[in-house]
Length: 298
Image (tube, rainbow, N blue to C red; front, side, top):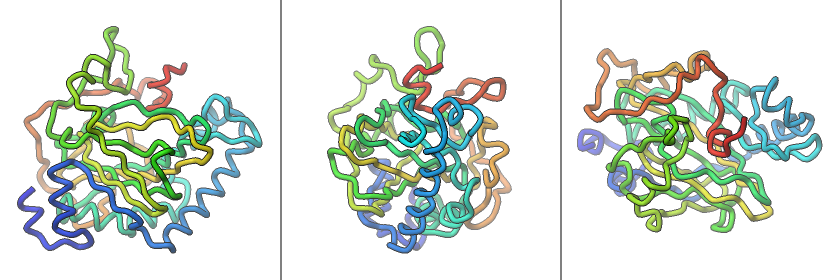
């Protein structure tokens, strides 16, 4: 941390960087330029239109781009997630590899930064599903914890729209088991373990369109169902320090997975002495999204 703070920042203030390391996350209200915001919203609208022609069965089976709510119907879309958007449109990748996310990642990870993966979570209005409390790194473990996720709200998000909540300082606490008593992967922290956390202390990041969220891979976070009438699209990209190597092959085959977006590739891997939970071997079965696991969908 100190080594990174001693480097001159590219885009964040000193206080913002200190806050990230102390709390494990920061929110940057209205951070994204209108030009980038307009670009991302236009592309996203095109994908919503594509999804509106799909049935739930096709969208979650043959068309791997989309993770759809069970209530999704042709002409009445309810998208949970656009999977790996950078693989499906060049301008998503241009943003992820050349936009302000890269400079934020450099300010918090150091000079050598890798892109890991992306997703676009919609949190559809009128009941968009809850995301239960969890940590990210158990889904895609690395050799160390210098891994973070950046997100940008593509529309205004107020407290009624189930903004993302994060428990301050939880990145310095334990890494929790996301399997249940029968050794089934659930993708969320159990109720028993939640008793060890100060859930009531969670802070919820809302703000105008273009607000950016940043959280460390060990942070405990989640969001309630969206009971408002408006969707809450959040475009997310995960980055790591170049010396943090993925342990599983979850993103293998991704068009840009493990691409160096700043600096150079690492010659030495860095290992954190703290253990990391391994997820199921998804190479032998279809990877299901966090929504499917947490909602116990077949």
